[in-house]
Image (cartoon, rainbow, N blue to C red):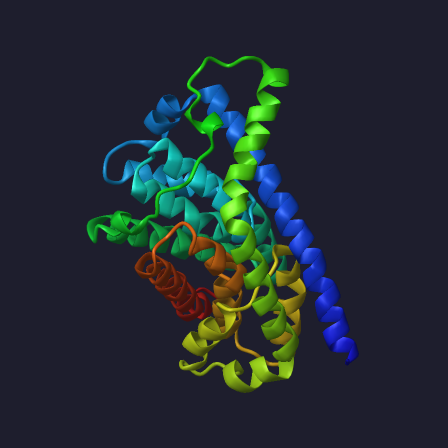
Length: 296
């Protein structure tokens, strides 16, 4: 076995542990917040008119620095609480793409002007996509979220000490149906990660040709690009000669969707909605890749 594959196995073993831990921690905190605030108040807060609900979803996503996989427990909490579909959809798309960490990385890697342009493009695209999902009635492709008995407990807040156990049980009820899809997705992602060298990315999506942008987005979707990896990947690709547009398309696609996330989403969304999500992330990635060079 080559050193690259040994490193790949080690890297994705660590990623698996991190994703499981992060999912459970986020799900536990979401459960605590839901039990403290109450589903009705949460539903009212996330509600609003045609444009207000997705705007709230985008704002919530922009202040929650989650990777694409760790948005799912909060998404499940929103679905369970009955929040508007457009708001949940906007959160799903915005959370991994508009969080403060990725904006800061883009500022460091390029400039504040490009970071601002990226934020505007991603914000507008997320708003339009969430509205389009609502208009198309894609909510009917959301699976019923299986919940535990604690999820139906509408009793008043009993204090932090008493609420820890039911909140933890609720987090496990969220995680159990996603455990196998997560492991399958990470395994497939590890194979792709180990089999796709940087030279291949340069050969298929290098330069500044227009066709390189959608191709880079297409290549980026199966990859699992962690937030802390975006800076070195971007620097390496730009140093090797890849154009600004393809780099942005690759980063947006890799950060917004991945094989592990899509595998886990299949437990929440029916296939048509999973495909709509992939198409939406691809659209945002291509739009960003085409517009960013103009901003620069």
